[in-house]
Length: 534
Image (cartoon, rainbow, N blue to C red; front, side, top):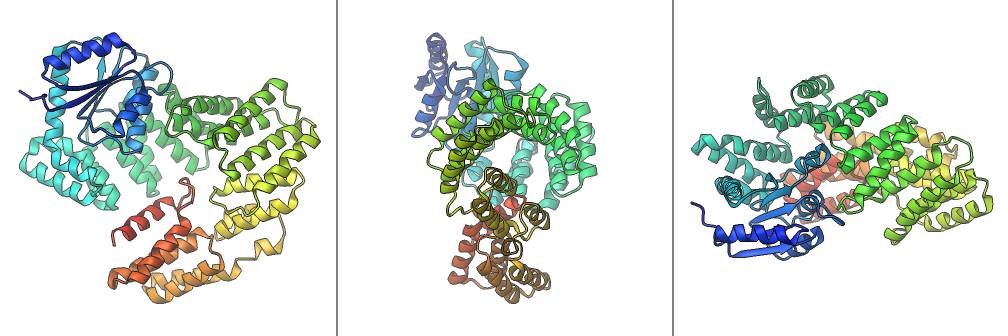
């Protein structure tokens, strides 16, 4: 029999009668420390200062954050211990709600009504599981993936019956460590005649990330046959179709995922982006509207969603005048950006440009020029740190609004940051023929190419010097900064040196503002972990 007397439990439910009822059940189980709240915001406030052993959280709390958003934020802010048991409680049974709850992966899902016996039976199993995995969970809480691997292997060897409980932790740790061969072996062993859903998705994602698109697609399609209600499979298929240039097929896959689980914010955002690229503005606007709504109580709220919605609404009717209702929605959407993110001058400039674009389309030239002027002023000293397609859009909008000088300044920054990428440079060249922009980084590119050759030949000191020259010439270029850091790490692996370590951290600091969507972001994270481990 489990001793609950020393457990600290939090109940979150907007009905006082239910809070009282569950508190009574817990008292009968000898729980002495029980806190009860009515809102998700109160849950987050308490969790800032208190570590709970068990959280029983209702999904639908009325206004404000729901249970899914609370759990996401607890994980995002690291205010919940891996040892804590989080149980999602609800009286609802709609597919949208159930899928939303399951996708945020609570430890358990409990349907109302329930009695003390069923609550205790569920908690007993969860407490026993957490106790069995204690060494693994302690390693997870320390963010020590190697210790997680060691603990999983020890538990599996000493208690084989617990192997299935360790497998997902082991897979996550191997991925963190970059041990791709071991990870693939583990996941392949779990994807047999009766594959575990999470393992099938993890293996398909792993193969896709390494460019093995055919193998990944076959796994996703097999998964859809076996688990047709698993939206992550449609996410994966969409990514594969998109990588192959078939954005229409990608959109159809995401639409299926959204039908299954419409409350997933990021899935709605990705659907909106794909639909916009496909000129399917009605579906793009619908997806972005949904994402804006979901984001209002989410830790993952982003101004990008509002800006995408405003841009979609501006584009949706082609060259014609925007009707008054749509123009009002654009203004309201951008007003929310201006109010919520008022301290970010680049964001406000982008909002100003979208306002100007909508107004110029409606023939309101003088008002549009006012917004263009405000955007130009805010973009003085623009430092980048935006995705290249965003920067290119800004430059195009500035030029359309008669701000060619500011447009060239923005393109110059884009060329310095991303000009080593021929595809991006080609897009820049489509907007300007200014040789000072297009040719500014030629010497740096030459140094970088020579540095790569030296690095491949394991001539690390020579490579470092060439990368230093490239980075000194174009200090905002992300690739040059990462190449410099990687060469420094190779030298530091041979001979520790505090000066070189400091230089490595500075180089990584030059890249730390890159968008998470950047294809180099994963590389940056790996280099950062390696540098921090020195």
